[in-house]
Image (cartoon, rainbow, N blue to C red; front, side, top):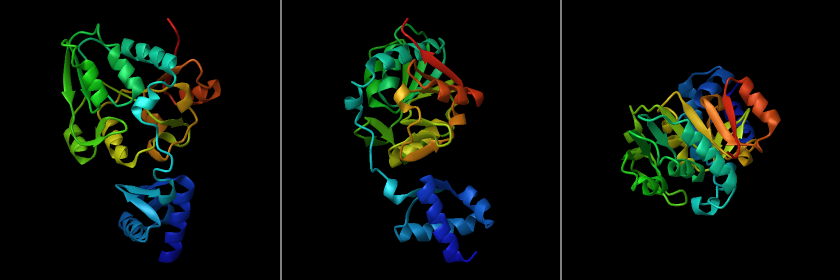
Amino acid sequence: MMKEQRKRAIVDRIERDKQVFISDLAEQFDVSEMTIRRDLDELDQNGAIHRIHGGALAVAKISTKNEPPVFERSNEQTEEKRHIAKTVAGMIQNGEKIFLGSGTTTLAVAENLTQHQDLTVLTNAITIVNCLIPMKHITLIVFGGFLRRAELSMVGHFTQSALKDIQVDKVIIGMRGIHIEQGLTCDHLQELQTDQSILQLSKNIIIAADHTKFGHVATIRTAPITTASTIVTDGKAPDDMVRKIRSLGIEVIKATPS
């Protein structure tokens, strides 16, 4: 395949899949990863794609439908989030080190940590910091970076650098979309690599997400669904999709009123 033909085929795949990775493209076209990097760089310069570390995104899909700000989402699925948060908090053991990602459901988890002892919480979310400041029994570690105002979280290079070499017992994080094939997805480009760094902190990844996230595919693919160890959701999560996720070896817990 000639270079221009390959580049057109790359654009077609990116438009179809929304996000691609260099290693996958190199295998598909039977060329070196260096060749694919040059192709992507040229396509990015021409505005045909948006280059990211390790791959590329479809330009037309970037930030076309952003997630609502965190304060707006605080009034959505409040009962479901309350049950999910209580269940997740019950999975946290005294003495553990956990990472709490940003979001309304993870904030609800933080609010349920009043009885835990000797707990260390790491976070990049200002809302969670404010919640945990009065809880003197919790050791709080805060990661700085560029402020994402809509989410009240810290993201970007400084955050990712600080996360390097950190290990925790559990990562508890929300996701905009959960899909069998498309995996775990988000809406914000700057948040992508920060979330990917967070997912490297532990082998025990707990996704806290209400039923509206199931089957939804957001703009950017953050990670395969098998990155999750456990997904805690509410009783309205679709049974067929829950069965398929469980068949992949992922624990799915439907939180119910106690």
